[in-house]
Length: 521
Image (cartoon, rainbow, N blue to C red):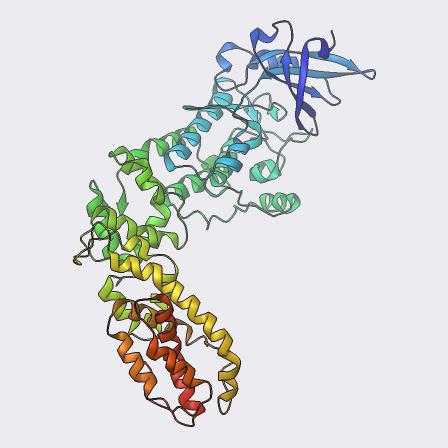
């Protein structure tokens, strides 16, 4: 009977080197009443039915798609194999990685645990291995709880206990292949190497060989070189991946080590050699050891979020801890501290960034002003304002920090716009060699510092006006700036922008008049 008499094709799911995969609807109640099935039709080879008899056993269906039917048929005078198997609506693990990342640490661990069970079943109970273990060949039957299946049988070796060289070649994808596979040898440990690559991909959304040609990857594997793992910052995940990506198959992690690693997921967090049962103590130590604490949080935020959820936290309240990396741990530390110990002074890079701390940075040296710019421009104050401040009238959040967070970037943007209109006139009036830009690289952090000071202090406007009034008025472009500074209302964004511009241009006006003027901080 022709396949079209047994199945109604819906769409082509995939076209591979070995087969074409169709999504189809069984006709006349076939395939045990399944609504949809996947029908794979080989291109030019018969089906090896002895393997399918083994894989079709009832006990195999936990980690193998249900095999509804199979056989061989004649196409253009040649016999080719076909098979109808279970359709998994969640698709493949490859699709999950592509579309659903980043996932929480607990969910990633659940995927690793299920993959370990799946591989152990194939390698142990079935005595089979797969030389092409990769996310595209792993089907997702369920996500709650996770049920993963090896869904492509093209890379099956009949007996994992055969470790000799394979004279017929190996079906494999080099990005997931083990070093011994590149040397023409197959065996159970290769599947655990593939799990290490998949774990890396679950964390980062890519393999460690991203962008490298397959020939280059194969060359590295033949040379016995493990891929670089510098991008894996979480120490626990680094331990798992390093254990699985051991070049020597005899020393590589297998099922027992992976299961032990997964079982360790409920361990309380550790920092600087200390185990914490209370998040307040952890947050306090992270904050006291600011740089190390921020780096630790960048690598362990997801696991900490899972631990906090198990302690009763609302998952939405700790979502910001997930998917951290690089500099994001610094801002997350401020938010964590505000969340669990809100009475402490907020810090960034170990420096206080409450109202008094910001004023100190604004009045400090170049490094202080640059740090202030980073704090304000980077949105850090939105989290710092969660701390209790003690200001009269502040309820729940620090209104002073919220005002700096909202106003200062706008003041700087307006000041920059005003300076762009004046740049040519100001620079042409300067004797000697003027700076190339206005504001210069040195002056840029000053804009942020002055805007912050004018926002924090009511009397800062008077000092700027006094500075502006002392400038000689014979410079052609200066009187207009002086008039605007004298009329500026510091309660408005526009007024503070005019004051910032006057403060920046006053030294330029002095130099245009042939003097140096008062020292500018």
